[in-house]
Image 1 (cartoon, rainbow, N blue to C red):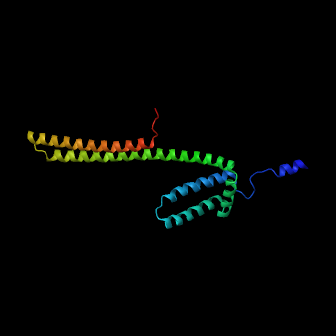
Image 2 (image 1 turned 60 degrees about the vertical axis):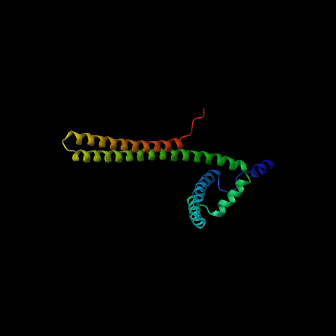
Image 3 (image 1 turned 45 degrees about the horizontal axis):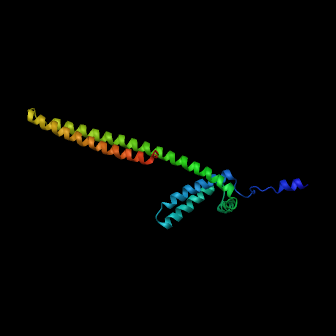
Amino acid sequence: MTAILWFGCKPGIPDDIIKPDKMEKILYDMHIVDGYIASIYVADSAKKVAAAYYKGIYKKFGIDSAAYNKSLVWYNTNPKELELMYKNIQKSLTQQKKAVEIADKMIQKKKFKADSLVIAKKFKADSLAIRKKMKPDSLSKVKATAEIAKKKKQADSLINIKKTGAMQVVSATTPALVQ
């Protein structure tokens, strides 16, 4: 009989508390929303947006604010459970951050390529226009060649500036190596 009482009174997560795997996902979403809300400068707008997002999270997980708050209080009084969840949340946030950095790099490379193509097309168009205006005499050819060289130098300079800017973004998102 003592054994039954001992097993029956075993401490654990009460039935009315959100289970750790679900609570972990809820907390992850809550922290993402909190981060977004912190970026909104107008307090009234932030409160309205926050309420809508929190309601969306509750709906997504089939809970209400009372169940969430009750569970949060329980987990705060059981720090080992909460610590385990936050280790997993931290891993998930780190993975998400890496994915965003990779996406940013890809966008910057694509933007650089598009900008470079626009500059190259403009240079070709300018060069063709200069050649069309060119007269058959040698002085006109020399002037046109010099003007084309100047335009090419400007185009190359713009491409290098864009490339440097893209590389700075890439290097800023890539962790520096420690020597």
